[in-house]
Every structure is written in C-alpha cells, then in structure tokens.
Image (cartoon, rainbow, N blue to C red; front, side, top):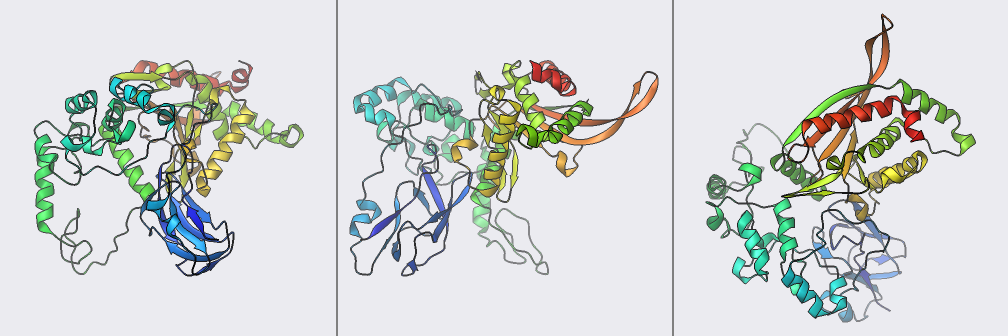
Length: 479
C-alpha cells in the first residue's frame, strides 16, 4: 500500500521547513530506516528516515523548496500503485497543534490581538483560535489587496513598514495588530520619503538609514545596480553586490546557508536597531577554580555532572539577574517586557553557524541540574538535532570565548533582549595583598546592554554583584 512521506513538525513553533537535499531518487528502492532527505528550519538541520520499505514512487518538492509541515513531500509504495490521494493539493491540512500546558511561554509573541482580530477568532469558533497560523512567504499583492485590520494598517502607516511582508496570524489569513508589531521588530522599514516608491517594488531592498530604514538613496542605488545586469562570478565584470574583479584573479562564490543568512540579518538588525554599550570588568577566579577542583574530585562519589567553569558562570548569572529586571527583559518598541524567571540563552558555535539554545527557568535550577541541561542543549545544537522550540524565548544570553583564548570582546545583542554577557579567558594579573604584589587568576566579563532600556549605572551594578558572587561562589550556593 502506498504511503506518503510527510514533512515532520520540529517543534510547535515551526510551520515550514526547507528541503536541502534528497538522498534518494524517484524510482529508487528504499528500506525502512534509510535516509530519504535532509531539511532545515531557520535554526537547525535534520534528516528524515523512511518509515516503510518500498519504491520511491514520486517526489513532490525538490531541494531548496520551502514546504509546510505535515505536507506530503513524496510517496513510497510499489510500482503501479495510485498516488493521487497523496498529492499535496489533495491532502487535508494537518491537525492543529496545541502547546503543552507546561511549556514555557515563547518570548516575543503578543498575548492580545487587536479587537477586530479577536472578534473574528471568536466568530470562527474555538478550534480556529487554537489553530497554529502558517508561516508564509513575503506577500507580492498590492497593499490594498491584503486582508488587514484597520488598527494594523494604521500602525503600519505610523511606523512606515511594508505590510506586504507581514506574516498574518489572524483568521482567514488576516493581518492583525500583533503581526505589525512583529514586522516592526524584523523589518523592512522605510522612510516616509521613500515609502511610495518602495511599495511598488516586487522585492525588498536593504536599508542604510537610521534603524535600517530604506531611503530614497537605497532605492536609486538598487535601480542602478539592476541596470548594470552583471553576472556574478564573471572575471573582469561587476558582480552582484560586489566590486569589479580583475580577470587574473580566481575566486568562487559560495551561497550562504539559510542559517547563515538568518545570522547575518539578525546581527545587522541588532546593530542597526539598538543603542549598544559594552562594559568590561574582571574578577578573581581563585574561588571558582578551587570549587570546581573540589567538585571534580567528588564527581563520581556524589553522582554529579561534569561541572565546568562555564556552568559556574551560567549559574551565577542566573542567580544575579533576578535582581536586575531591566536586564532580564525584552525591549519592544515602546514597551519593556520584564520576565519573572531567567530564561538563559547559551551561545553555541556549530558547524552550521551560531545557535543560541535557551535554558528555561535557569534561576530555579540547582547547579547540577543547570549543568546537565546546558550540556544537553549544547550537544543537541552542535548535532543539529535540537528542538527549534528550545532556540527561542531567551531573556538574556551568555557567550563564552574564553576557551579560544579571547581576553576581551564586544558581544552583540540578541534582540529583543536587553543584555548579553561575554565570558573571557582566564589570565594572570597582579594585585597588592598585605603590602606585597601577588599573581592571581582573573577572568574578564564583557557586558553589552541596550542603552535604550538600561542605563550604564545599573548595568555596572549588575557586573559588580556578579563579580562578588563569582569571587564568593560557595556563599552564592548558600543563598
């Protein structure tokens, strides 16, 4: 019997995935457990195994295509079997996915839609309110043809954002106010002078104005670049978005992965849309080095996780942050969303690029629990098997470049978070003790804040308290 190959849902927040490669061809015989294709979300990569043995009768989506989750991407069966019922256009949409009642709230979503959207949700019935809205590609319809509530349209006009690129979450594909709030965070934004010309474009243009806004100059430069019509990679000619390359120079254009594109966009928007300030301090690491030595010696006897210096820093950050609400928060335009507990983002270097899994409720966990969960998140992020729901919702981030010998650096904020802490390498410094100079192990901490939400003084006090907690780590455990 023919069996459809369904695009899996990797987490309740994921609505589409991109097929990166098919490992089998149409007509190939496959066995249960064979890898059929690779795919990725905007955060992680996965492989899909065959659930049944048979012949790959049809492939509905090629590599690089974006596919809604729970959609058939192919069919396995025996030659001659009817595959018509499994064609994507003939399949009923997948069931609505409900969030687990104990799942942590995903940061950045609005709890209240606009009045018109809420009324429409109620009219559609209870099932419609629970339906997870699909993530859609950028709209190409004219703005007046979109389904959009009056409040959402007014908000978009006020902030000069392109409503064609809003992801509708209202009933029947309707753009509501919360969708515009999300668009304000992610762009694209336009200056008032460029708005009329910009809305006539079929594709977005990168902005160089304040806050990443598209200006009339950007539009004119884009038009001039299109007129050149050069082919990227041709020696001696102008490449798309690049300088003229002499014919004697050999080079190769490498397309960016979807994850790399996401990182690039996020980093640019972070610097363009926030007021970032970095403060540096260092602390005497003698106490945490001695404490870790004791933990290592008693690890097997006490059944402890292999607790690292990074785990000790994460623990201290989580316990200290609860006293500084503005640093455990999201800056949302004219609102500061402050969180009750610390959902700690951990920056992880992977083969696919930087990922930031979230350790939820970090301030409520014991040191051993924190170390266990941090290692699981880091391991799964590096393997590409992490649940995408664990790659969002962070309220503060810690990034550690100390293992690479970095003594000080400027971390870039992970919007809409208001703070990120960089942990650096341990180096030996000199300080006076009882009239004599002694060497001691010191670690630098680099804190970047969004100065729109946090002033320098409270940020400095956070660093000061964190420093005291790390230098007196056993006392922190007693609190």
